[in-house]
Image (cartoon, rainbow, N blue to C red):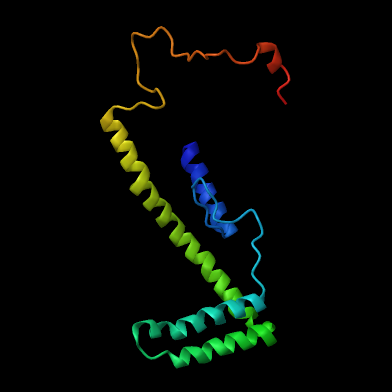
Length: 162
């Protein structure tokens, strides 16, 4: 058997044995910094306040408030103020949900920004003949060196840069 197929097969076997899913992307989905979960008290008070606001939101449209939502908001507010330890698991689940949502939403938003802003600007610049980076070939040019005017610092000053 040739070297490369054997090496690839050995790598696949090693990866399966390690139980890891290895991808060949330029980024890792694990963070290099520790992300701290908010306190249980803050979680309870925040969720309770948001649910309280959502309770009375139908009043803006001249409808009856959601009274059942008021009960859920009261439970979160009381638990957050008096018994924050009860909210440890809901807080952790909410945190994990946020991390999962981040892996889905961030690429979509970044792709939307790229295809909605960068691509149209590049297309318009190409159509107008702009060459901001000076990448076009110029056969009549003797050099592509860009002269500085005024000249930069003296060459002796760059001896010990760091």
